[in-house]
Amino acid sequence: KSVKWEAWYRDITRKLRERNNRQKQPFLQYEHAIFKKSWVKKGDM
Amino acid sequence: MIEDRQILRDIWDGRIPVCFTLSQDEYTSPDQPDVYYLLVPRLSYFPIVSDKVVRFFSQYVQPDTQGEMWLEFQGQPLKWHYPIGVLYDLYAADQDQLPWNVIVHFQKFPESELLRCGSRDAVESHFIATVKEADALKHRGVVMSGMQKRDHKQLWSGLRDDKFEEFWTINRRLMEQTVENQFRSIPFRIYQIEQPLIQKLFQPLHEDGKPATLKELLEQMLPSVLTPQPNNGGSRVLIQGIEPPLETPLVWLSEYMSHPDNFLHICITSRSLP
Image (cartoon, rainbow over all chains, first blue to last red; front, top):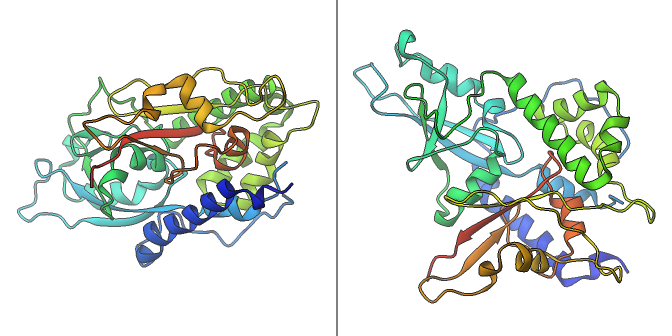
């Protein structure tokens, strides 16, 4: 059975979204501490 | 087996807005320096992200008095070798005030409370040593010792440069489990304010093969957390800035909600009364 059907899983995904909405989204205009470089090394997960 | 990229991505993308302010007894200019705002990754470490902060505030302090930068929040010196998200969750999350107001110091380094950092190399050494320690707990260290030096470098550069793919291409090997090769122990650390951190051996599965939960870990390591206290609102158990349900399997938390150092960092704070 996939964990995606578990109540705890749904609770965690919801809370992570809420965390990012509260702590990150309103502050995206701030200077970012790490600038992405143009060179990106891709790999398989 | 790591399959759920969205969770990993949501955790990787966690950020904290920080307002850096130079300590008021450390600047020599007649006017108070501006503050410096920065959006920092939760998973990173302050020495990796604070070059700009050092450069910005250096113009306000006399060069001969400028020592190693250290940070403070409400009188609490912040340990550079703890992930930024852990520091925030432990000391500031309860106040829920953003941006996080952090004081910058260049003088009076608190030698008795903080380790000196010196350079980014020290952060890299600390990071790789911690990943090795976690791998020793999970797989007797065979995964890290089986990697090449360039793989260790890629773990570090992935974190340093905020490159999710670069990091996880290597880190997935540290998170892999098979039926024959389960995690032997869960690498975890429990933090409380003004208490030594708790790190002990804890097996992820019971003898009957049933997965141990976060609640069972806390019952064994810190039972008081699960008992409401009459004089306060009880405790909050924060991992990656959220309160996971206590019935969550620990091995899942370890795979998905560990920091890049492969440890599950658990912060215990007081719940404010309404």
